[in-house]
Length: 396
Image (cartoon, rainbow, N blue to C red; front, side, top):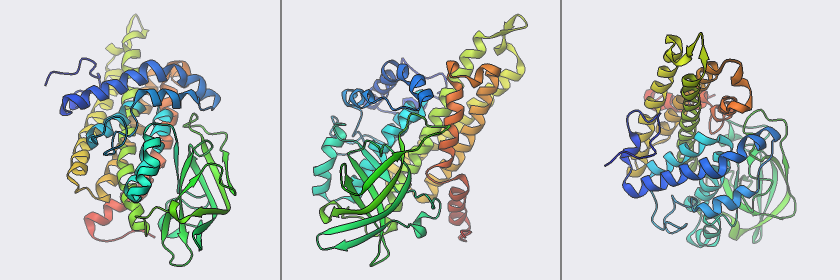
C-alpha cells in the first residue's frame, strides 16, 4: 500500500498502513473533521467548561457514528477494531473531551445496547443513535463506589409487575445532562445480580446535575444522577444482561478504547512539542537542536510507538474474538502510564508557555489525568493482569 498522504509524524513505524484502503479513507475523514470542524471550538469551550451543542449536529453530518455495529450507521458493514481504535486515537489527538463525548455515546452506550440488548431493542434504539438523532450515556460509577462496583453497587432495581423501580445515585456520568437514553446499571434486589436499564429522557424521578469545578475534561458534561422511584418498563431492561459477568464483557471492550484514547493524547502533545521545538529559539538557535530537548522528544516517540504496537495486537485479538480481560487491562494500565510521561515531557519543552491554553499542550496535560483514572485505575488493572499471570487473586 502507498503511505497515507496525511500521515502523522508520530506514526514512526507506519502503523496506519495496516488498515485496508477503505478504512484508511475513513480515518483521514475523521482527521479532517476533527482538524477543520471541531478544533476551532475546543479551547474556548474547554476554558469555559461548556459543551458546544452544535457538536452534535456536526457529528451527525460527519457520518462517523455507528461504524463498529453491523447493520447500523451509514456504513452497514462493521469496521475492524483496528479502525475503531485509531478513530478514538484520532479524535483524542485533537481533544480528549470531544473524543470522550463521542466515545460515551458511540462506545459505552451503543455497545451496551448492541451487545446486551435483544434484536428488538437494537432495532428500536440504535438506528437513531447511529444517526446522532438520539444521544446516549452510560451510568455505572456511583458517588460512594468506584473500583468496587462489581460487588458494591448500591443502586437498586425492584421488579413491580411489568416495570422496574430504580433507586440510587450515579456520578461522573458523561453526556447525562442532555442524553436521550441513559444506560443505568442497578442491582436486582431479588437475585442480587446487576442488570441494565435504558432510562429515557424525561422519565420522572431521574435528575442529572452537571458537576462543576473540574480540572480535566472540561467540555464533557459529567453529571451526578439521582434516581428516586424511577419507573422503567420491562421492555427497557437489556435482555442479554443477567449478571455483572455480562457487564464485564462490555467493560473489557471499552477499556481497550480508553487505551487508544490515551495514545491519541500522547500523539497530540508530542506533535505540539515537536513543532514548538523547531520554531522556538534560545541562544540563537531552535531548541530542537539541543540534546536534552531531542532526548525528551525521542523518549516520547518511543512511548508512542511501543503503545501503538501493543494496541494493534490488542485489536487483532478483538477481531479474532479471543481477547480477555487481562489483555485490555494491561493495555489500559501500560498506555495511560506512558501517556502521563509524554504529556509531562511535552509540557516541559514549552516551559512557561506550557501552562496556558494558547499553546494547547496544557489541555492535553490536564486531560491526561482523567484518562489515567477512569475505566479502571492503573492499580486495579494491574491486579487483573496479576491474577491472570499468577493464578492468584490479590483483590481485597
